[in-house]
Image 1 (tube, one colour):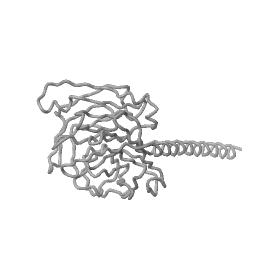
Image 2 (spheres, rainbow, N blue to C red):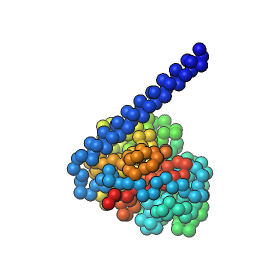
Image 3 (tube, rainbow, N blue to C red):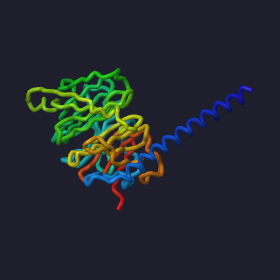
Image 4 (tube, rainbow, N blue to C red):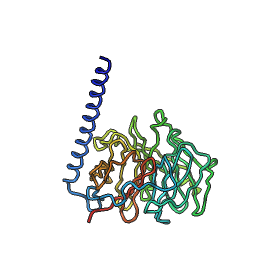
Length: 298
């Protein structure tokens, strides 16, 4: 009797999971269909035409916990983080490991973005702290113990705090996403200027997208601001998608990260980092150590 009851419970649980999975896919396909039917702005990425050129490459030299992603146009390389043992990782555009930088004076790094030259910003998830960092081309260690920082106390923080970070060069501001409970998209102005010796005049604002039906993802794990077009890409791990937003905050295209979509052989597991290079190619990294590159289909 107990065995039969256990079987029934397991069958019901499996059916529930399959139903949720089907509903999730229905939402994804509906959003994809709706966005791809509308007229695209001239400068749009039009993510529906992107296909995986590098599909789930395991990054050699990294065992686990690959997160965040930013593109440095001056070095033409990508940077990511490992947060258990705090490391900055420099990668080629092919997903090859170039160097590892041991970081001191931080805890739970989750966000990282390039600003200009050797200037970067680090985001800690649990403390919701932003840290200014300077990283030279040949540097192997980085001590941020005394670096300028800004702590933003929102909600309870914890493991659902700051998850993604991007620099908007045109607007001279940082964009920060909070993972969920609730979802938040913040803009931070004036913080980066503190290093330039300017008068500190910091402004922190919430965009209001969290209350908008335009933000239809379950969580936010990363973002990247593409200053030349004014468009923003948001990555959701749980919803397995990248969504492009125009300058008004309206969604204009979608890149599905499910198996069979966007040329993927398997669903991208736990996508944690997102970046775009100067050629408009889209990069995603996922835990434990997988690397993806998407390009427009010809």
